[in-house]
Length: 204
Length: 258
Image 1 (cartoon, rainbow over the protein chains, first blue to last red):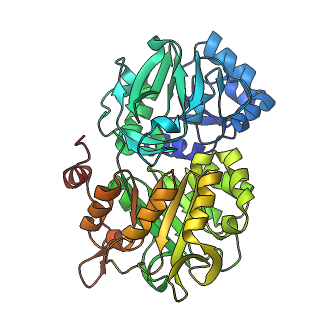
Image 2: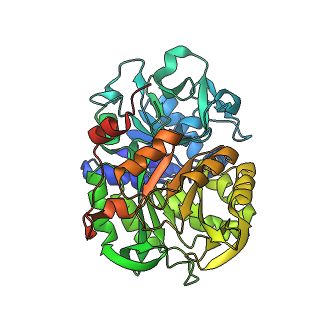
Image 3: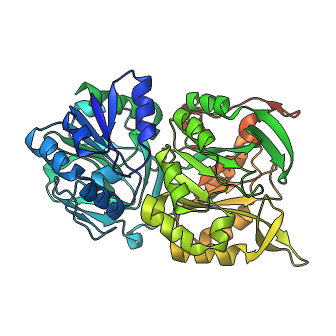
């Protein structure tokens, strides 16, 4: 059973719709007790950093999440803001992140983006799988995924890099560390590629 | 490599989908859910749905309809129409949309855009600017209420203001070109591109794929939105939902030529 965490980050329905299509069982957790029984976790993502972190802090979800992910080693997939909150901190806010992955969330440097539009990075972009992983089985890397974000992860340890994407230079668009996975793009809104990735996650 | 976005733009009027000309003479083109299902199959880059009744009827968004549409959308979905509060925007995102579009509410209350951005993220805040010429000098002015209400705000000045505030995207919608299928208003886009740093989506005037090609060749990374082009076929404008395939787009727009 996949448990999608409702921490105010929105578009949960977009993910549940896909698992309905795939006939994969899922549940939604907005309280600590609902999260206790999770076998796989998704942290979805449309929202701002502090808004989402304060929701996690105030709902009691954070403690259970830390236990499930760091101690019980339950597989977790973060999407967009769900990736950001796994980092140490973010230039988008002042609250600390969950700190599961060593890295800082930074805003794209507009002075380095030579062409307009600058930020947000919005639209369909290719990915390059840097470390082969089942999560990207049968995914068309050229076709890629849909991105909509102004911030990215500046990763400290290169071994955590799963995919990269070119936007005025390469940035890290997918990260991993043992049972932790996170992507900057939106698989729930990326047609066939996205469905494959979400299915691959449920098959892990 | 980031690609330009080709976006069907759908108008909802009395629960049905319509296509207008110069924001008038709305013609019924079908059922919204059915259209979304077809666009799903065609794997469109994104979808914009605008409820053109909400502001006129002085009511909020139709959440039931948004939910029904969002359930079907396996592509990024932008909703606009009657959104005036942070809570409404938050709810729309919760229902499964990635972007929320504002027009009259934001034009009259810029702080609303900042407040919404603090909750759903600035990247998801879209401002739709319906514009046309006004006065003897033909200055471009922003209109609201389906082109009926002049705001007194010049297009370029207001775009500069939005650039200062920071929004996720602006949709430039030429009222005069709406439904005409004679090509985009390239001159205006060029001027807006000069003063706005973020993503721009252009709407109004696309009549053939060559019009989209012209826009993309000129501006590279841009949103090319169209209504008529993707819902009508042939000179008698028979309703037939259509959209280029990934392979067609690749060939047509040379996306992968560096």
